[in-house]
Image (cartoon, rainbow, N blue to C red; front, side, top):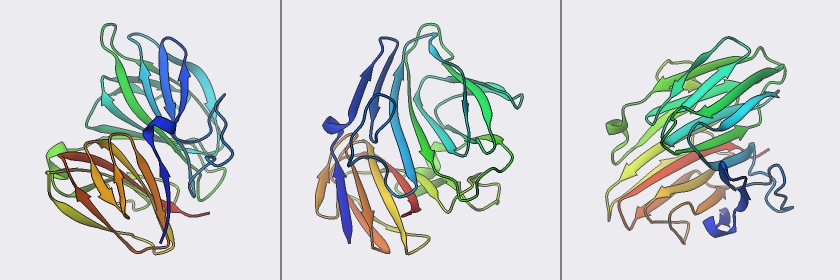
Length: 236
């Protein structure tokens, strides 16, 4: 088993007034030579956005971009004609492919928005851009993992152009669970959304993370009521 711990307090910091961001990996003006990516996981930003503010129109290509609102709503618009608001319980994915222009704003004029934005490098490059969002029943992740994103076009999850799986789980204090990797050579980036857990001999608190690879099963023990995000990706 190989592990790399990313304490929450050691994440990159960006404060633009309207945007307060924490970067798990090198991003924009934050650079750390040992935090460029974890396998195919390139970006995990923990963004807090002021009411009415956001990112104007900008372009992406050849990246799988996933947005998970934690509180507040995300107002989305893009060059494919998609418009809408993504709220907690929903997940958004955009395969930028050959290129797409989009904007993301806080949909509220009075409430703060907090979200995770995740970038995963694609399996196939230069595919046609695509967009999707899906509502998930939060009760379906109580004391188990609920798969949000996968390479399986089943309709029960959002499809991603990569051999990657994203799952959320909410677990009771003093419970434990095994996460079985879908592909043995993949790795898993474990992010504690809230609470406290033990994994691979490490104690992790809120927003702490650990990358685990060279293993087929990961055991997690929850010391408090805990919400955890699991990002399984190829170790490219």
